[in-house]
Image (tube, rainbow, N blue to C red; front, side, top):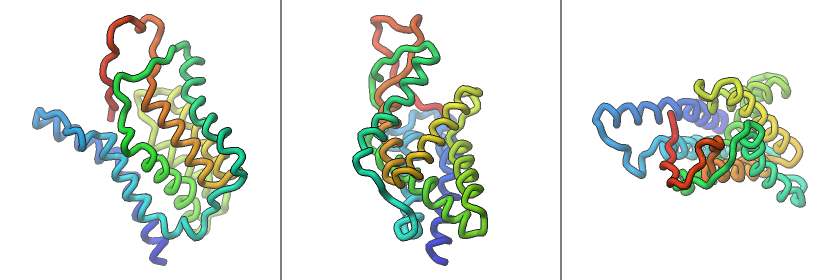
Length: 214
């Protein structure tokens, strides 16, 4: 009972993380201040995510399937790293290294935390509340997509999030939660270290510092 309550609080907390990060940006804008390096929107989101996952760990550690097929680790890592690159190339864009990688300090822990929350805690809770397995999986997937989708990304962004979520769930079902964690970490590392550019944008000039939009 206590583990279920803690996991529920963790998921609700995580669902509020984007709104809380956006509120922090607006607060700094009203004060005409730049966010401090330790309080950027992405860092705020990551820290809330990690805290939420800590609450969900007790139910996950005893009931979730963690790992199968260790020989597939390189395949999961490659899948996560290639997915954004394939999407960029398919949309006619080139890839360049970011001038400054974004939020590498909290990236692995945040990716692990999201998998604990959405590939383990969320479906376990929904099944505990009486939903069939397939419905619990579907609702968990929809929650993850809704949490990450941004309106300015359009239909292509929605399609990308759906594909990523399907791959993460496929990894979790075939290889356990750890397989999904590996896919997620390598996917996010590529997003943090590289960015897409259209051919007309490529020049000898130093690329601008990247920023997350909330």
